[in-house]
Image (tube, rainbow, N blue to C red; front, side, top):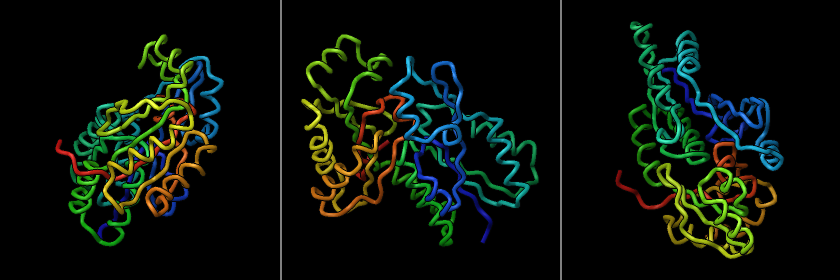
Length: 289
């Protein structure tokens, strides 16, 4: 069996214990907030980032992983004797990181034409545990002796099925970002309007407006139940741990079985929704691209 490695980036929100268990290498994004620079997973935990957002005066900005960082990684694994490297990336339409990985792969092939290492890059077309969970599945498949072609076919199929529904409990960050007008956001907060979003193929869309905090959870769960393929695994994600238990319980009650896991959303999602959001990842019907 050839030596292989699975790589992804820190927007995958994969808990570190799972990454370590399945030997998944996570390359980390740089974040700037209120004039300070940070590295995700190094300088703060997801919980700490949520608190940073609550106290921030401005909006966070994320720097893509650079071509040079990828090139250094590729050379490192080549020296270690890796023959097949799989990188599962953040949505290419929302980040230049995927393109940087492709440029680095081309540079690596030019610099090392005799290297036997094959680099495969898969675009998740999404964020968070949508592709973090699938990095785990890819690692399992490779460990079981599946070929890289079989793994890529599986990933392409799953990324055309997986969806996210999120509920935002405040419009503060969304208002600052300009995604809705300041006037509309302030009015929404005053009236207790809570937007329910889908995140599908990298695009967010408001599908419902819940009135009051108590209606957010039921709206999210009901929408998931209506859209998901029965019996398939799902995950719960939250920007504040106070939402975890109620979301897990409500989902299990509605579906009859518990989630595959629950995770704290990282900076890629929270920078857009704010520190008061929660939602679900699930498998829907296959979409045509």
